[in-house]
Length: 607
Ligand code: F6R
Image (cartoon, rainbow, N blue to C red; front, side, top):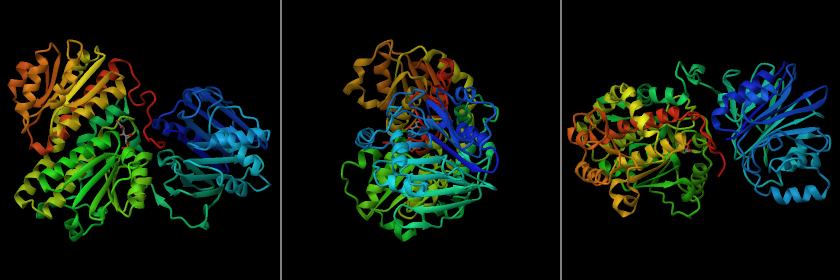
């Protein structure tokens, strides 16, 4: 969702601005633009469409030491050249790029129009350029600070001024911004992915902080308390993790990477000697674990599906009451927050606005909230009282895959940890550890069936609708399978508990409604099998994910994908993989842009 880059240095910053925007493409966007200073004047180029289109429309000889860039994901005003960022003031002295939403923009715009400012777009963001212009009195920093007093809503903002060409100003309030500290150059971007090729030294701005950057200095300020000192963090992952490594798409790479990424998540976290796990980042003593009476999860989308499975594990195996909630609903329903409840926020990106909002609600009410996230240094990671990183490596494709299985791994490790501190015996702990150890090779066995899954995709691609059915641990997997299919293929898909079928969706069944059953050999197998028969009797095409050797399912289904046998608790790690692959292959067959599906963003930084 909207990408920002900014550069101030001693040499031409255009390569960073463009490369940086390309590194942010995965966040989702519909238009792109740049502004730069040349001969003391601001030049701006912006275009609806891809960065590639923008590149074709900018002069080939740009050589500027002060630039800002932006990829826009439309909120106010349709995708168009005019609505693209950057936005400039009336006299073209000032240019801004913005991520977020200025909630009171219509009031501010009406006032600015009354005062004679001329607007050229339908966006909320353009008011920022005019507001700073209005406040400017030969001091850009003062003008920016003065303008901020009027703003409501979240923003990440970078400002370039022809009158003060030796600096750029970056402001964060609710939308992430990271500073990159270079040699004779300073950078700013919406996330570290844009910076990694240029510097490993970064500073994460917090909400209500701003920075003034020059070619060889940076100063950071808090909106209220004045100048502050910030620590420099190091980017600790390798740039090659951001390459496709021979795969056609990032999503394909990330699906096939799972045996490895799950291994990274578990690395160093299993204590065989004591048949338990250790999650150092949680910073919780055993006595604290013992006091937990309930566990609540807040998350969105795929992360919510992982949370649902974690909640079932914890209730079933550790007997702790658990609850899972859509973060955006939790934050606005005035929830009861209790000191003896453990709150977890789960997020791949660590920047999901709704999840951050839920965390803030928990904190306001005096609760402690722990994070499970992938992106180090992200807002959720920094807002957490403790937490566990996934260590799954950068996830670039919009549709989440490897982060999901790594989230499951963290939740299973946590179930083992808290279980062993309570009722779980060492022998059960050891059985689980054997399952953890078998996960990567079991996943490999499923990935090896890619040709079979491709052949099912050939049949699946012709349908307009799809139902995914499962029960127990595989109800969230049904939701996840449907989410994957709909988001990247645009085929309408719904996930249901198989038992809910007769409470409504059964009326949809006919030859045009294919059904995917997730039916491994578990406690609810016989019940799901009855549902399968009910569906088959209604002329539907039936696809199944079943346990190796299950011939009964084979007789009923049109196609079966087999997963290796495993302990019931660990089956969701396996049943989800064929569903990810199926969605991927259907999307490829339909010619869809798999990594960047329409309208979607990787980091959902607005409500
Ligand atoms: C689906 C998907 C989304 C995200 C959701 C939460 O494939 O990627 O549903 O899971 O937007 O994002 P995070 O996990 O970054 O908080």
